[in-house]
Image (cartoon, rainbow, N blue to C red; front, side, top):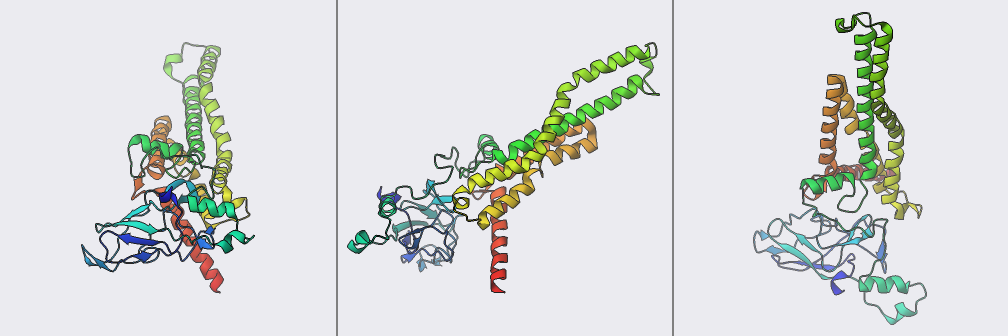
Length: 348
C-alpha cells in the first residue's frame, strides 16, 4: 500500500536525468484536501507550473521539461476533480528522455495533537495515509479496458459508444444521435418512396407500364407499397422522439459524471464546459450528416451521410491524440475559456 498513498502539493519528485529534487506545485487546487494540503490528479503535470526544472540535465545540460499530457500509474478508481488521483507509485515521462518519479508524497506526519484534536476527521486521515479511497464518483468500479493510447477499432468504438478511458459515459452523448440518424433515414425513405411511387401509379404523368390497370388496381398496389414502408415510418417516428430527448439524455449523462460536485451544490467550470460542449455536439454529427446526405442523394445519400456521421463520431470520441480524445480537448478548451472569463469578471 506504500505506493498508493495520495499525493499533495509539496510532494518531492526527482527525474532520473536531472540534477536535483524539486517539489510539486498546485497554484489552482481542485477543492479536495488532506490535512489542509490540496490533492493532485493525473493532469497536474504542466512544466513550470506543477513540475519545476530539475537543475542540470544529463541529456540537454540544462533541464527544460517537455512533459507527457498526464501522469501514468494513477489510481483510476479514485477521482480528484473528475480525474484519476495521483499516488506515490505514479510516474511522468519527459520527452527529452527522462522519467519523473515521486520520492515523498508530501503528506504531513500524524502527531499526538492531531489525534486529540476533535476537528480532525480520523477516518479520512487514516484513509489518506493508507491509500484508501477518499472521494469517489459514479464510475468508481470502472476499470479502463484499453490503454489511453490504443486506437484500435474496438477501443475507439468502446470510447465512442460506451465509456471513455476515465469511465465517463459516452453512450448518453452518442446513442441518441444514432437513433436520430436512423429516424432521419427512415423518414427520408418513407417520404421519398411515397412520393415517387405515388407519381408512378396515381399521378397525371404515371408510368405507361400501368396504363392497362384501373385506378382501383393501381391504388391497391400503392397501398401494398406503403404497407411495406411501415418499418421506415416507425423509424422516422422514433427519430422524432429521440430528437427532443437527446439534449435531456446528454445533460443527464453530464450530471452523472459530475454528481459528486453537484450534490454538494457546486456548479463547477468543468461541469459547465462539459455540458456546453456536449450539447453542441449532440446533434452536430450523425443526424446532420444524414440530413445533408438526404438533401444531396435521397435515400442513398441518407445512408451514406449516416455512415459519415458515425465515422466523425468515432473520430471525435474514439481516436486519441497524445492521450486525449477531441471531445476531451474541447472540454478543456471550454473550461479554460470559462476560467479566463471568470478571472476577467473578478478583476473588474
